[in-house]
Length: 81
Image 1 (cartoon, rainbow, N blue to C red):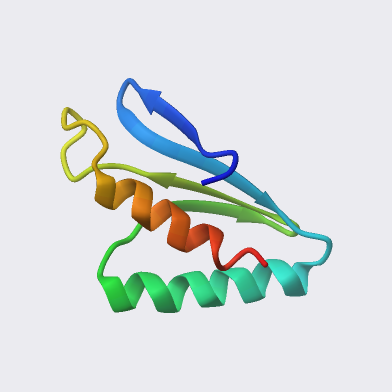
Image 2 (cartoon, rainbow, N blue to C red):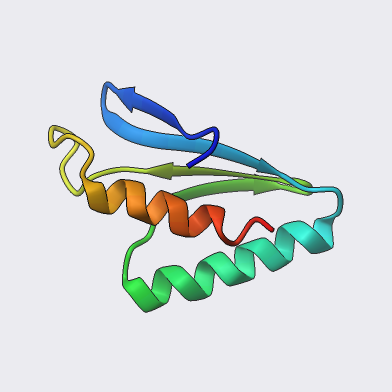
């Protein structure tokens, strides 16, 4: 879980992924999209030509982050290689 920023108002994890080319960005988004559909969990995503920002939130903003949130962040990190 490298470089994920843990925030508490509201509870969330945030990370920016940077890429050298648009093709690498698009490939990452494609893999991420397939995975999120498979696990039925959908983070907040914003992106540009060579970056992707991801925010993971619990179902309820007042609920602290759970082990599942951290596990999902690690799974996302796995697509960044």
